[in-house]
Length: 270
Image (cartoon, rainbow, N blue to C red; front, side):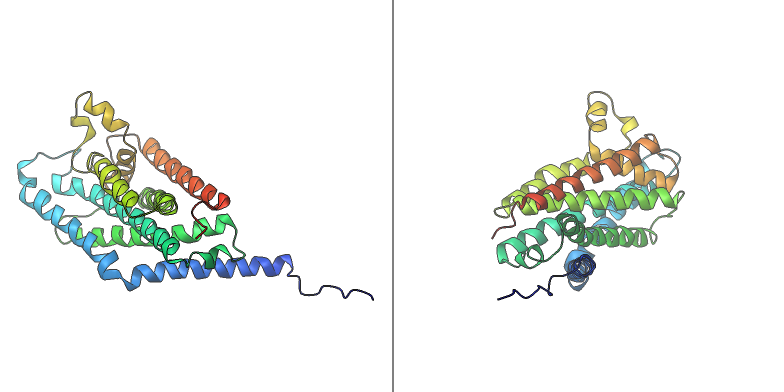
């Protein structure tokens, strides 16, 4: 008996189209989840930024001298934008990946034809969108209280997007390693939040003396804050090339780390 030729093997082009459809579906699912739960994923952090502007900028701003040629209430806006972007992007992916693993529906994208690169990018998209929406919402809300300027739009968009990618990738890493909510809470509260508050959001690093100046310079969040500050004000305490470069490098490193976890299958077996 002569074996029949196999005719149902997908061609490379069909596999590529299936992968692209899978990436689009994964991105859509993550983004729709953020938008559908906007009252939980977007609104609280925008309102929190407004409270910081009112309390620190409006109430105390008149008692604090101008910094780098801008009023204190204008000075803190870039840091608040960055703070919202980073914390939201991280929390989004850490929660999304852990829930997908604990509830078992992570098997759907994992068993699809998508490659590890496409899985990493698809999950990152949700965190980036949430972070950028909160950043934009913070800018719009801040405009009602303080003058908002954008001196270098390219630098601003690059810095905010890179920061969102890095934070979302970190959330992916934590979400894939988590065996419960404890690791997410520890990373967000004990690690990320102190780094943000000590990263030059509410003060200029030039006003610090050693050893605090040196310690702050070792904080990666400082470079993200100063990159956003340069994009908005056209000046910063650090070299803009250094700030943007470090921000992009951190994003690339964390995204690469998250990619290796998908390659190894870390946390993907339920």
